[in-house]
Length: 80
Image 1 (tube, rainbow, N blue to C red):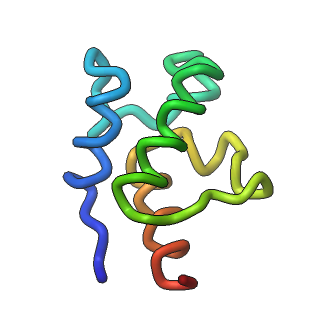
Image 2 (cartoon, rainbow, N blue to C red; image 1 turned 45 degrees about the vertical axis):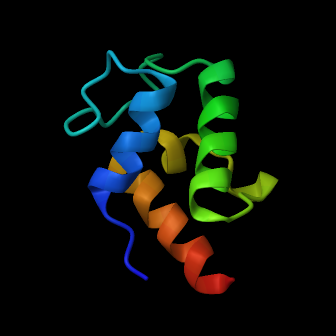
């Protein structure tokens, strides 16, 4: 099952809507998202895609862009 960028962006916009997810590449490193946002995103992605994001994958490089998050979700869906 291919996860689209649009699917991930929809989930992200439910958490924090005033962000340019299509172009932003430093969501964590640039301070766009705070730790509460990250926890909300993890919960929303887990629910939306029926995955469980392990602690080892909760690192800035996986959360700095919608594309990185899509790649993470796609990998976890395929592993399941």
